[in-house]
Image 1 (cartoon, helix red, strand yellow):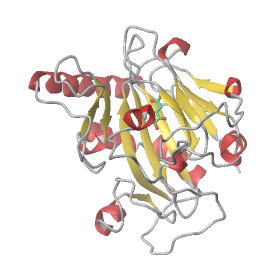
Image 2 (cartoon, protein in one colour; image 1 turned 45 degrees about the horizontal axis):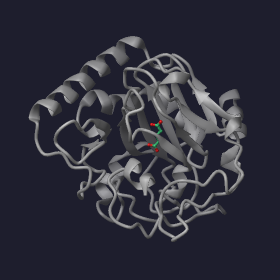
Image 3 (cartoon, helix red, strand yellow; image 1 turned 180 degrees about the vertical axis):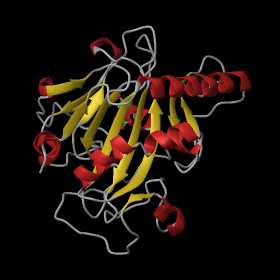
Image 4 (cartoon, protein in one colour; image 1 turned 60 degrees about the vertical axis):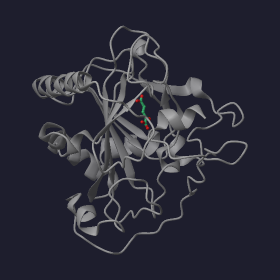
Length: 294
Ligand SMILES: O=C(O)CCC(=O)C(=O)O
């Protein structure tokens, strides 16, 4: 095991400051601006509800009204523009992901979270474990966060609770037993003061385990805090439910096209991991923001 693997195994995350070249980040930001401006010009009716699937690129807004709504998230940017696709396959990123996942890598999902400025409602993300949203046959799944802009404590950085990936899978259900995608940290006596703030310059990259508890607060600054999140899974980690991302039962060919390192196989690896099915939901939610509000 090398030093990165040891750190990740112990802490459930790995931080690489200034990992992606500034020139690449600048190019990506240019495309992001174009995409956002184009969307604003369209002035079409915006929806936060609806039945879009994660397979397609789409926006998530902070309001249903076509006036004054702002983009909270761009889902699956890698399906929209080559520049995001290339970032999702970036050699430096994949080399680390491969090490952390034990040798094989299949792309899982992509999103670009904007975290709106000035404490605008709808941008906080409550403490959760990604694993509660998408149980698999083993937990070799990792999320990679890439900051597109400098992120300080005041921008509402991603926060991760160290070593939580080795502990239990907490309930993400409400008292009425609906899946709400968040953990009651008070009830569960989870020490959030021990969390690590992931801050850094644009191009900083964090890798975190699917069971690591994480979340983020408000952005107190005047500009957004764009963070790209890409999910990857070991090729033999098979989904137990259809989480809306490319799913083997829906389209096996597409599912296999997402293999970045490794070979096609129909043999899942089963390990003894705590799992929960993220159901029932009160209705179809398009994003974690909407789900956690309930
Ligand atoms: O954008 C953030 O700060 C965290 C997002 C997150 O955890 C998620 O989208 O699952």
